[in-house]
Image (cartoon, rainbow, N blue to C red; front, side):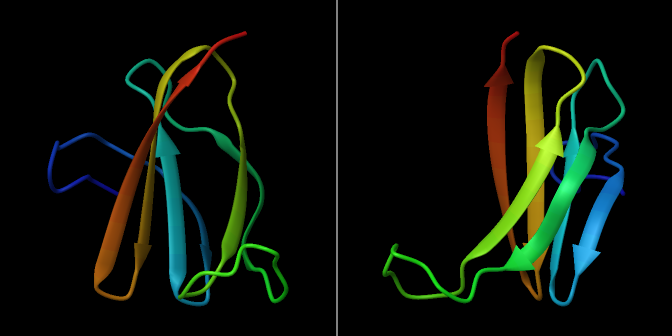
Length: 83
């Protein structure tokens, strides 16, 4: 998968129902998925919309890019991972 904004190569890690999650770093091809995406039916975080969970195992320190897509919507999160 190629990020349309940055051109960064991202491995499609996991896809479930209507949510897809991918995670990559400039110095590593991708992070291993540990679970999900999975819908959370019950939550104590009462806000509009659906709640989902996804886990990744980061193999090295650095800045990691998590890209999520659902239907015609996308979101990005950058995480600074330290050991």
